[in-house]
Length: 329
Ligand SMILES: [Zn+2]
Image (cartoon, rainbow, N blue to C red; front, side, top):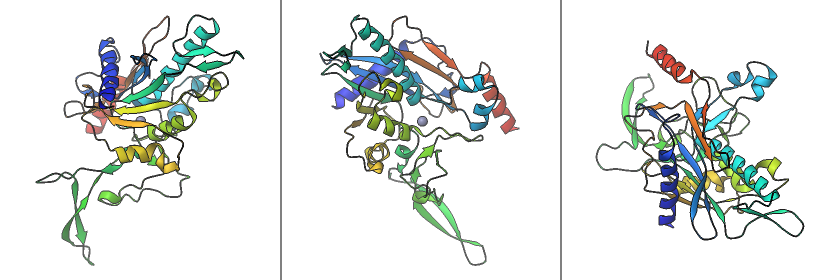
């Protein structure tokens, strides 16, 4: 299965590389790439949906303007969520092909004229990094020498003077905050006690808080109910993911993925294979790439295809620069 995960990652990254430059990060920016791959009955693989994205609108941005303007804004532009939106467009196109007897790659109609998923096909998810939220909380690896996995804390005596330095094991953190209604909240204590695991979280971001749930929470829902959403569930059976592959050279924990995607909900129905590929997405976060790219690319395998460069705001890149400048001043 290792090779399979490698193939899924490579295909998604190759498809991204093949797309035009518009919407891709500049030299200082990073992004997340997600995609959905179809495994055909003959075992061949094809990318059917692909997206990049790092941004999410806050509550105040969503509530500005007329009713029509509010309804036409996209609140969640994380790559995982956009690739699922692209996949839904792919499903609509496949439904149309099925109803017109034009040969869908994934559906056929049964004796009762109902749409069925073809046998021996499956869908596989790729993301260049671990999803935000619960899946991203796990211990940092121990290393030899000065360890980045430990943080220093200066304890204080009864008079408030710093006296002792102690070391705590640290965890990878997520900027995603526990949903307010959750009983348990992050203690924000040093090291491993910074987070608790299990609660639903809203997407990370500074400033204006968002109501959008973290990608870990959303993917957990898709694993249980399918990717198709409630509207399409009237027409087609649930479309489940068979595997999830995370890109190479990025923090990853199988335990945290399993916990974040189904174990924390006591969900015994979900059967999904989780892998980390070695193949690396070149536009991922790194030393040279420290700014999140504010623009997204959305692509799907449909007829009359066009690649959508989803620009949240025509001046958003400039705005992001201005905000940064302001912060520095
Ligand atoms: Zn996310």
